[in-house]
Image 1 (cartoon, rainbow, N blue to C red):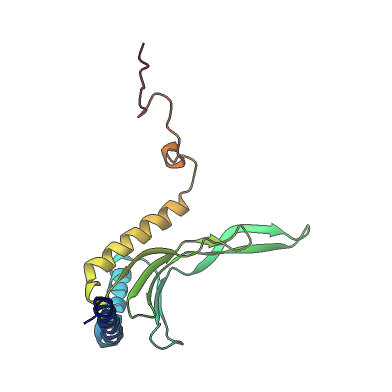
Image 2: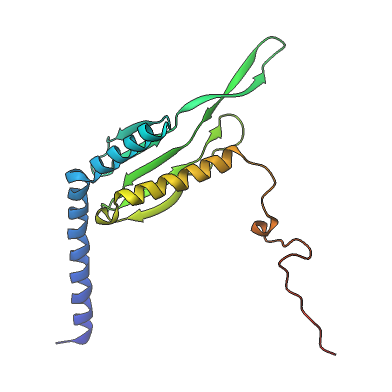
Length: 182
């Protein structure tokens, strides 16, 4: 048999395996993963006092989302429209999102807080993509820890971040000394 055809046959076999995986992943979502995610998020909310709404968005079949939404509040900031009228700016407090992808895998992402009318919100940040059989309760806890750290960092924003993140090293600290040869 032609060696090039063998390579193509192997690729076709891999392609069919991937298509079957997609069917299984979608089945896994409906057979328990969706419920595990929702129960775990509800448990986190009730046991920690973290007030959140857990929403299922299922308008697109096999591409559902589960959103752990911290809600919206008044930001405490308002725009003066005129001498007597102020327009309050609303703050979205952020969300942790679990979304089925087209291939049945689960995209975990976060939407950070933002204040409407005060800059543009950042696009959602991907935390990771997992196969349904990989997504267990400890992973959901870890995602929540990441989300809470990032939301807390957003709320506590200031310029005290180490300059190294911006590509700079403070003078005399953690710098390499290059000695010139004579």
